[in-house]
Image (cartoon, rainbow, N blue to C red; front, side, top):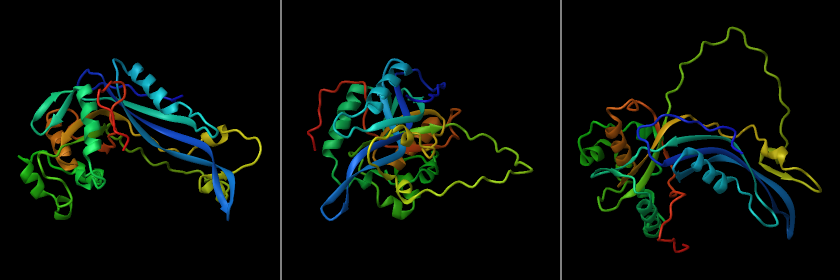
Length: 282
C-alpha cells in the first residue's frame, strides 16, 4: 500500500487528480543462461509511475490508483508490486488551448485521447516530448504569439517540432512546490560507514534463485526514485510541448505559481471515466 499521499490547496476545485508513485516490481522470469538452456531469475525494477484519475474526491482517486497499479497479475509468474511513496495533485479545472481555456470535459478528453493514439504515426517526435524540462521552463510567457515563440527557439529545436495549427496533442505538466531554503552545512561530518559491494547479480537487478524465497526482500528497495512535492497539475492541448509550456506560463503569470518549476509528464489518458470510443488494438 502507498506509504503516504500529499494533500495541497490548488487553483480550482474539480475532479481530476494526478498521482505520481515510486514503485518496485519483482517477477520471476525465464532467462537464457546458455545455448538452449534457461533458468528462472528474479527481475527487480524500480521507477516512477504516473496516473491521472477522474473522481469526486482524492480518496476515490486513490482507490482507482490502488486498483490500477498495485493489483497483482495472475499467472504462473505473477508480478509483485511495492508502492514506496506517492504524491498527488489536483488538476487545474480548465483545459488550456491555443484558442483559450475551456472547462475540462473528461469524456471528450478520453475520446480524443483514443483518436490521437490511433492517428499518430510511429514517429511522433514532432510533439516535442523530447524537450527537457530546463528548455520548457525557459520558455518566456511574455512572448505575444506562437510565431514569435517559434522564432525565439534555437533552430535545431524549432525545426524538430510540429507548427501546424490543425495538429494538436495533449500535454500534462506537474507544477512543483518551491525548493526549501538550503540548510547550513554541518561543522563536523561523521565518517561514512563502508557498505558491502553488491555482487554482479544484484547490481544488474537480476537475481538467480532456486528453491523457496520471499519477494519481500527485493521489494524493500532503498534505491527507488524520490518524489518531488507538487502544487498542482495542468492539462494543455497544443501543437507542440513548447507551445504548451508557453500557454501555461501565460495562464499562471498572475498567480502564486508563476515562478514554480514544472515538468512534462507522459500523457496516457485518464482512468475513472467511460468513453464510447475504444482503441483498435494497434
